[in-house]
Image (cartoon, rainbow, N blue to C red):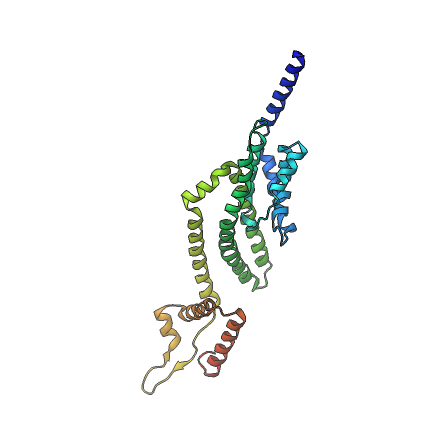
Length: 293
Protein backbone atom coordinates (compact mmCIF):
# COMPACT_ATOMS: atom_id res chain seq x y z
CA UNK A 1 0.00 0.00 0.00
CA UNK A 2 2.82 2.36 0.93
CA UNK A 3 4.53 1.60 -2.35
CA UNK A 4 1.38 2.45 -4.29
CA UNK A 5 1.04 5.79 -2.46
CA UNK A 6 4.70 6.54 -3.13
CA UNK A 7 4.27 5.80 -6.84
CA UNK A 8 1.17 8.00 -7.01
CA UNK A 9 3.04 10.79 -5.25
CA UNK A 10 5.94 10.48 -7.64
CA UNK A 11 3.55 10.55 -10.60
CA UNK A 12 1.91 13.73 -9.28
CA UNK A 13 5.32 15.32 -8.77
CA UNK A 14 6.34 14.43 -12.29
CA UNK A 15 3.10 15.88 -13.67
CA UNK A 16 3.66 19.12 -11.75
CA UNK A 17 7.25 19.23 -12.88
CA UNK A 18 6.16 18.75 -16.48
CA UNK A 19 3.69 21.61 -16.27
CA UNK A 20 6.22 23.93 -14.67
CA UNK A 21 8.54 23.38 -17.58
CA UNK A 22 6.05 24.66 -20.16
CA UNK A 23 8.01 27.50 -21.70
CA UNK A 24 7.34 29.76 -24.65
CA UNK A 25 10.14 29.81 -27.21
CA UNK A 26 10.98 32.40 -29.84
CA UNK A 27 9.73 29.93 -32.44
CA UNK A 28 6.34 29.83 -30.69
CA UNK A 29 6.04 33.60 -30.73
CA UNK A 30 7.05 33.78 -34.39
CA UNK A 31 4.32 31.26 -35.17
CA UNK A 32 1.79 33.48 -33.38
CA UNK A 33 3.01 36.46 -35.40
CA UNK A 34 2.63 34.70 -38.76
CA UNK A 35 -0.82 33.39 -37.86
CA UNK A 36 -1.89 36.85 -36.70
CA UNK A 37 -1.46 38.16 -40.24
CA UNK A 38 -4.70 36.33 -41.11
CA UNK A 39 -6.72 37.31 -38.04
CA UNK A 40 -8.94 39.73 -40.00
CA UNK A 41 -10.12 36.91 -42.29
CA UNK A 42 -12.68 35.80 -39.70
CA UNK A 43 -13.93 39.18 -38.50
CA UNK A 44 -17.66 39.33 -37.86
CA UNK A 45 -20.14 41.70 -36.25
CA UNK A 46 -20.91 39.48 -33.28
CA UNK A 47 -17.45 38.90 -31.79
CA UNK A 48 -15.36 40.92 -34.27
CA UNK A 49 -11.70 39.76 -34.04
CA UNK A 50 -12.05 37.14 -31.32
CA UNK A 51 -11.99 34.12 -33.65
CA UNK A 52 -8.90 35.37 -35.48
CA UNK A 53 -7.29 36.15 -32.13
CA UNK A 54 -7.92 32.61 -30.93
CA UNK A 55 -6.60 31.18 -34.21
CA UNK A 56 -3.37 33.13 -33.77
CA UNK A 57 -2.58 31.84 -30.28
CA UNK A 58 -4.16 28.37 -30.67
CA UNK A 59 -0.82 26.50 -31.03
CA UNK A 60 0.32 27.83 -27.67
CA UNK A 61 -2.97 26.97 -25.99
CA UNK A 62 -2.49 23.40 -27.18
CA UNK A 63 1.02 23.48 -25.75
CA UNK A 64 -0.06 24.96 -22.41
CA UNK A 65 -3.07 22.73 -21.85
CA UNK A 66 -2.68 19.08 -22.90
CA UNK A 67 -5.82 18.39 -20.87
CA UNK A 68 -8.84 18.83 -23.15
CA UNK A 69 -11.09 20.45 -20.54
CA UNK A 70 -8.55 23.11 -19.61
CA UNK A 71 -7.84 23.76 -23.28
CA UNK A 72 -11.55 24.25 -24.01
CA UNK A 73 -11.83 26.66 -21.08
CA UNK A 74 -8.86 28.64 -22.41
CA UNK A 75 -10.40 28.80 -25.88
CA UNK A 76 -13.66 30.09 -24.43
CA UNK A 77 -11.79 32.86 -22.63
CA UNK A 78 -10.57 34.18 -25.94
CA UNK A 79 -13.93 33.94 -27.70
CA UNK A 80 -15.27 36.99 -25.87
CA UNK A 81 -15.93 40.02 -28.09
CA UNK A 82 -12.67 41.74 -29.00
CA UNK A 83 -11.97 44.56 -31.42
CA UNK A 84 -8.96 46.82 -31.89
CA UNK A 85 -6.74 48.11 -34.69
CA UNK A 86 -5.32 45.07 -36.45
CA UNK A 87 -1.82 46.59 -36.65
CA UNK A 88 -1.68 46.94 -32.86
CA UNK A 89 -3.21 43.60 -31.92
CA UNK A 90 0.13 41.79 -31.51
CA UNK A 91 1.32 43.33 -28.21
CA UNK A 92 -2.03 42.32 -26.71
CA UNK A 93 -1.52 38.78 -28.01
CA UNK A 94 1.92 38.72 -26.42
CA UNK A 95 0.41 39.73 -23.10
CA UNK A 96 -2.23 37.00 -23.35
CA UNK A 97 0.48 34.42 -24.04
CA UNK A 98 2.40 35.48 -20.93
CA UNK A 99 -0.67 35.19 -18.70
CA UNK A 100 -1.75 31.85 -20.16
CA UNK A 101 1.76 30.52 -19.62
CA UNK A 102 1.58 31.58 -15.98
CA UNK A 103 -1.82 29.90 -15.54
CA UNK A 104 -0.58 26.68 -17.15
CA UNK A 105 2.41 26.53 -14.82
CA UNK A 106 0.45 27.01 -11.61
CA UNK A 107 0.55 23.97 -9.29
CA UNK A 108 -2.46 21.68 -9.50
CA UNK A 109 -5.22 22.77 -7.14
CA UNK A 110 -4.18 26.44 -7.14
CA UNK A 111 -7.00 28.93 -7.60
CA UNK A 112 -6.39 30.58 -10.98
CA UNK A 113 -9.72 32.39 -11.31
CA UNK A 114 -8.17 35.84 -10.84
CA UNK A 115 -5.51 35.17 -13.46
CA UNK A 116 -8.07 33.76 -15.87
CA UNK A 117 -10.25 36.84 -15.40
CA UNK A 118 -7.25 39.10 -15.98
CA UNK A 119 -6.83 37.65 -19.49
CA UNK A 120 -9.96 39.38 -20.78
CA UNK A 121 -9.66 42.35 -18.41
CA UNK A 122 -6.31 43.27 -19.94
CA UNK A 123 -7.58 42.67 -23.48
CA UNK A 124 -10.55 44.96 -22.83
CA UNK A 125 -8.31 47.54 -21.16
CA UNK A 126 -5.91 47.69 -24.09
CA UNK A 127 -8.17 47.30 -27.11
CA UNK A 128 -9.75 50.77 -26.83
CA UNK A 129 -6.56 52.85 -26.46
CA UNK A 130 -4.74 50.75 -29.05
CA UNK A 131 -7.62 51.16 -31.52
CA UNK A 132 -7.42 54.94 -31.22
CA UNK A 133 -3.64 54.88 -31.44
CA UNK A 134 -3.73 52.71 -34.56
CA UNK A 135 -6.32 54.91 -36.24
CA UNK A 136 -4.33 58.08 -35.58
CA UNK A 137 -0.87 56.73 -36.44
CA UNK A 138 -1.55 54.10 -39.10
CA UNK A 139 -4.82 55.24 -40.63
CA UNK A 140 -4.43 59.01 -40.39
CA UNK A 141 -0.66 59.47 -40.67
CA UNK A 142 1.42 56.65 -42.15
CA UNK A 143 -0.99 55.46 -44.85
CA UNK A 144 -1.88 58.96 -46.16
CA UNK A 145 1.77 60.05 -46.19
CA UNK A 146 3.05 56.94 -47.96
CA UNK A 147 0.04 56.97 -50.28
CA UNK A 148 0.64 60.59 -51.21
CA UNK A 149 4.32 59.98 -51.93
CA UNK A 150 3.49 56.87 -53.95
CA UNK A 151 0.77 58.70 -55.87
CA UNK A 152 3.20 61.49 -56.71
CA UNK A 153 5.63 58.96 -58.14
CA UNK A 154 2.84 57.24 -60.05
CA UNK A 155 1.76 60.51 -61.71
CA UNK A 156 4.82 60.21 -63.91
CA UNK A 157 3.66 56.77 -65.03
CA UNK A 158 6.22 54.97 -62.89
CA UNK A 159 5.45 51.57 -61.35
CA UNK A 160 7.71 52.65 -58.48
CA UNK A 161 4.79 54.55 -56.92
CA UNK A 162 2.58 51.62 -55.92
CA UNK A 163 5.63 49.45 -55.23
CA UNK A 164 6.99 52.10 -52.88
CA UNK A 165 3.71 52.25 -50.97
CA UNK A 166 3.28 48.48 -50.68
CA UNK A 167 6.87 47.74 -49.70
CA UNK A 168 7.44 50.58 -47.22
CA UNK A 169 4.04 50.22 -45.56
CA UNK A 170 4.41 46.47 -45.09
CA UNK A 171 7.96 46.81 -43.76
CA UNK A 172 6.71 49.29 -41.14
CA UNK A 173 3.51 47.40 -40.32
CA UNK A 174 4.88 43.86 -40.23
CA UNK A 175 8.10 44.93 -38.54
CA UNK A 176 6.17 46.59 -35.73
CA UNK A 177 3.79 43.67 -35.36
CA UNK A 178 6.67 41.20 -35.17
CA UNK A 179 8.59 43.14 -32.53
CA UNK A 180 5.51 44.05 -30.49
CA UNK A 181 4.50 40.39 -30.13
CA UNK A 182 7.78 39.72 -28.30
CA UNK A 183 7.42 42.99 -26.36
CA UNK A 184 3.92 42.11 -25.14
CA UNK A 185 5.10 38.67 -24.04
CA UNK A 186 8.08 40.07 -22.12
CA UNK A 187 6.00 42.70 -20.35
CA UNK A 188 2.98 40.54 -19.56
CA UNK A 189 0.52 42.16 -17.14
CA UNK A 190 2.99 44.99 -16.45
CA UNK A 191 2.29 46.43 -19.91
CA UNK A 192 -0.68 48.37 -18.50
CA UNK A 193 1.49 49.96 -15.82
CA UNK A 194 4.22 50.82 -18.31
CA UNK A 195 1.77 52.47 -20.68
CA UNK A 196 0.19 54.47 -17.87
CA UNK A 197 3.43 55.66 -16.24
CA UNK A 198 5.31 56.45 -19.45
CA UNK A 199 2.33 58.21 -21.06
CA UNK A 200 3.59 56.65 -24.29
CA UNK A 201 0.25 56.71 -26.12
CA UNK A 202 -0.09 60.48 -25.78
CA UNK A 203 3.54 61.03 -26.78
CA UNK A 204 3.22 58.86 -29.88
CA UNK A 205 -0.05 60.53 -30.87
CA UNK A 206 1.46 64.00 -30.53
CA UNK A 207 4.58 62.99 -32.45
CA UNK A 208 2.58 61.44 -35.27
CA UNK A 209 0.39 64.55 -35.48
CA UNK A 210 3.44 66.81 -35.82
CA UNK A 211 4.99 64.52 -38.43
CA UNK A 212 1.73 64.33 -40.35
CA UNK A 213 1.32 68.11 -40.39
CA UNK A 214 4.89 68.63 -41.59
CA UNK A 215 4.51 66.18 -44.45
CA UNK A 216 1.07 67.50 -45.41
CA UNK A 217 2.48 71.02 -45.43
CA UNK A 218 5.12 69.92 -47.94
CA UNK A 219 2.52 68.14 -50.05
CA UNK A 220 0.21 71.17 -50.07
CA UNK A 221 2.93 73.47 -51.43
CA UNK A 222 3.94 70.89 -54.04
CA UNK A 223 0.59 69.54 -55.19
CA UNK A 224 -2.00 72.30 -54.79
CA UNK A 225 -1.65 74.40 -57.93
CA UNK A 226 -3.40 77.68 -57.16
CA UNK A 227 -1.84 80.81 -58.64
CA UNK A 228 -3.12 84.25 -59.61
CA UNK A 229 -2.19 84.89 -63.23
CA UNK A 230 -3.87 88.27 -63.60
CA UNK A 231 -1.52 91.25 -63.74
CA UNK A 232 -2.88 94.67 -62.79
CA UNK A 233 -2.05 97.53 -65.14
CA UNK A 234 -2.54 101.13 -64.05
CA UNK A 235 -1.80 104.17 -66.19
CA UNK A 236 1.59 105.59 -65.42
CA UNK A 237 2.58 102.65 -63.20
CA UNK A 238 4.49 99.45 -63.67
CA UNK A 239 2.38 96.28 -63.98
CA UNK A 240 1.58 94.69 -60.62
CA UNK A 241 2.01 90.93 -60.49
CA UNK A 242 -0.33 89.82 -57.71
CA UNK A 243 1.22 86.36 -57.49
CA UNK A 244 4.71 87.80 -56.94
CA UNK A 245 3.39 90.04 -54.17
CA UNK A 246 1.78 87.07 -52.41
CA UNK A 247 4.92 84.96 -52.81
CA UNK A 248 6.89 87.80 -51.25
CA UNK A 249 4.71 87.54 -48.15
CA UNK A 250 4.58 83.74 -47.84
CA UNK A 251 5.47 81.37 -50.71
CA UNK A 252 2.53 79.08 -51.34
CA UNK A 253 0.10 81.32 -49.46
CA UNK A 254 -2.84 80.63 -51.77
CA UNK A 255 -2.53 76.81 -51.70
CA UNK A 256 -2.27 76.99 -47.90
CA UNK A 257 -5.29 79.27 -47.67
CA UNK A 258 -7.37 77.00 -49.91
CA UNK A 259 -6.38 73.95 -47.89
CA UNK A 260 -7.24 75.64 -44.58
CA UNK A 261 -10.57 76.74 -46.04
CA UNK A 262 -11.42 73.16 -46.96
CA UNK A 263 -10.34 71.98 -43.50
CA UNK A 264 -12.64 74.59 -41.95
CA UNK A 265 -15.62 73.35 -43.94
CA UNK A 266 -14.70 69.74 -43.22
CA UNK A 267 -14.77 70.45 -39.48
CA UNK A 268 -18.19 71.98 -39.99
CA UNK A 269 -19.35 68.49 -41.04
CA UNK A 270 -19.36 69.20 -44.76
CA UNK A 271 -19.15 66.07 -46.86
CA UNK A 272 -16.35 65.44 -49.34
CA UNK A 273 -18.89 65.78 -52.17
CA UNK A 274 -19.73 69.33 -51.07
CA UNK A 275 -16.06 70.21 -50.82
CA UNK A 276 -15.44 68.98 -54.36
CA UNK A 277 -18.33 71.17 -55.50
CA UNK A 278 -16.79 74.17 -53.70
CA UNK A 279 -13.47 73.59 -55.49
CA UNK A 280 -15.20 73.39 -58.88
CA UNK A 281 -17.20 76.53 -58.13
CA UNK A 282 -14.12 78.50 -57.08
CA UNK A 283 -12.18 77.30 -60.13
CA UNK A 284 -15.03 78.36 -62.42
CA UNK A 285 -15.36 81.82 -60.84
CA UNK A 286 -11.62 82.53 -60.87
CA UNK A 287 -11.27 81.36 -64.46
CA UNK A 288 -14.22 83.40 -65.75
CA UNK A 289 -13.00 86.54 -63.98
CA UNK A 290 -9.51 86.06 -65.37
CA UNK A 291 -7.83 85.80 -61.98
CA UNK A 292 -6.47 82.36 -62.79
CA UNK A 293 -5.38 81.02 -66.16
